[in-house]
Image 1 (cartoon, rainbow, N blue to C red):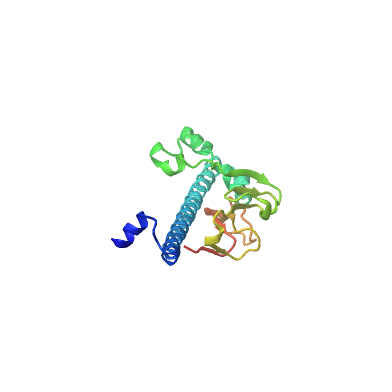
Image 2 (cartoon, helix red, strand yellow):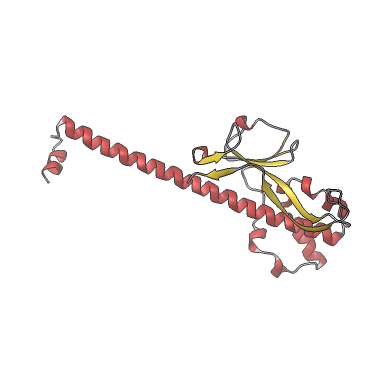
Length: 203
């Protein structure tokens, strides 16, 4: 009570002031670190949701190709920009054709549109010169890339700007044994994006 009274009266000694301000600065520092962790976790959650949406969109796109028997497009599935599947057009066409019912379309897919922080297709840009927190598709390497915003909480195995690199991978039965996806001879199994590096969120 005596210290509180002296604080109100602004009658603290120099040592007491130093201790008080030190405590305040420590609390501010802890709060700032906590908020940075909150932002990093929000970014991690956003990236994970985007991966789920992209994979769902890719699978619907593959189904669309199979229904139409468009095997040339199906064979090129591994080289497409996965962001271009996130429009919902293929679902509308499948619904019109009666290939699927509205009950089979999940709410997650309906909401899977290109994110506002997707900046388009670029030809081998320098990641170090890219804005943080954006997605883009590298047309030269056929990779979907996300530049990490909260890099201080991200450990990766790549030099330069902290980033995630994804590529479309098609799972199939290689009936002709040539190591290339050649439908309809090769049987399509699934499609998804895979991470090309090793990383972890240090949270």
